[in-house]
Image (cartoon, rainbow, N blue to C red):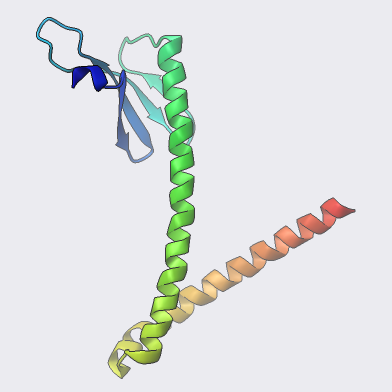
Length: 138
């Protein structure tokens, strides 16, 4: 098992991760994890832990992980939106076929406001994209 372990472990946290160097080459043949850095995905900061000096190999591995993490989070954002479209469709079907008067009374205003807000933002952003595209063609 120890031979299959990566050299680094990234403990995910809200805006990034805590980075550990994984060591299995010790006398007790146990897994040691030494905290070496804290990273922030949002601003790209890599902060060494304590007096730790990060090597170029450490930094390269951390930067590669950060790039992959940003890509994963971006894919999740888009996937969440696709799910939201599915939820809107199933909500429409529920309203059409199953919702009682009391249930409709409970959710109608919140749904209408949220949908109005979303529509306004979508229309504004679409207009901005169209204007930008039209400006690029000139």
